[in-house]
Image 1: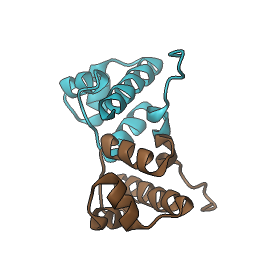
Image 2: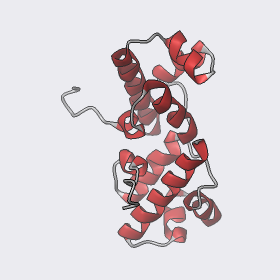
Image 3: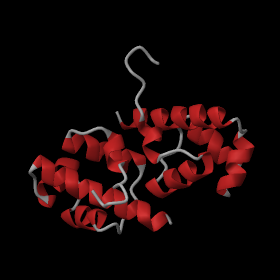
Image 4: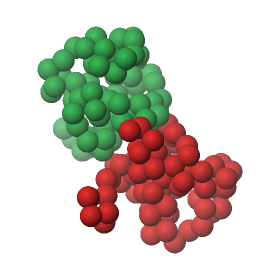
Length: 76
Length: 76
C-alpha cells in the first residue's frame, strides 16, 4: 500500500538522522524547513518529492537510495 | 543541484522501462497516468513524490532504490 512507503521513508529519515546524531530541529534548520515538517515526515504523514529527498540526503550526508531501504521481514 | 535528481530519476525510469521491454504508453496505462506524464518524467521535467515512485516500482517490478542509482563518473 502506498501509505507503507511514507512510513518506510519516515522510519529511514529517523534512523539516518539519529545515526548522524542531530535533532529534528537541526535537520529542519539544515534544510530550511519547519521542525513540524520533519516530525510529520518521520511519522509517515508526508509524501515528499524526490527533490525533498535529495535535500534530506545532502543534509544527512547519505545517498538517496538509503531512504528506500526496506527492513527485511524480521524488522531489522 | 536539485534539477540533477529529476534528470537522474528520469534516466533511471527510462532505463528500467526499456529493460522491462514496455512502451511509455504501456507504463502510463499500468500506472493510470497520461503518457505525457511518463514522457516528461523521463526528460527530467517532473518532480515525483515517493508514492509516485512506489507506483513506478510496482509497474516495472523493481525496488524503489533502483530509481536513485547514480551513474558512476564514467557515465555507465
